[in-house]
Image (cartoon, rainbow, N blue to C red; front, top):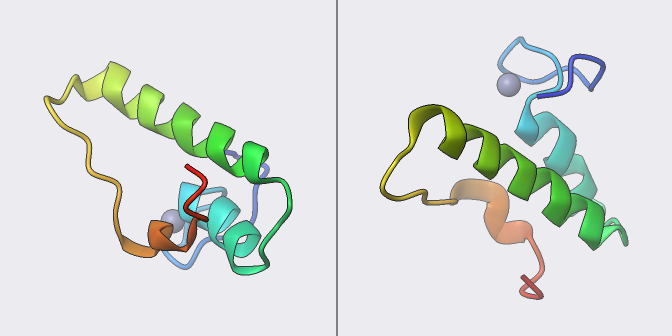
Length: 67
Ligand SMILES: [Zn+2]
């Protein structure tokens, strides 16, 4: 997602989880920034594979219920 982003546990760089999880774990006050990055990722995946349904799960449960 972000070639200049942080290293990810999977061995790549700038994966969505590597960018968002630290922000969510630290309760980053930039909730709008987190939501924007997550929505950009969902829109990008949706444009590529055109799925009928996108389910966001896993550690994304750390996102405040404001969404
Ligand atoms: Zn990764």
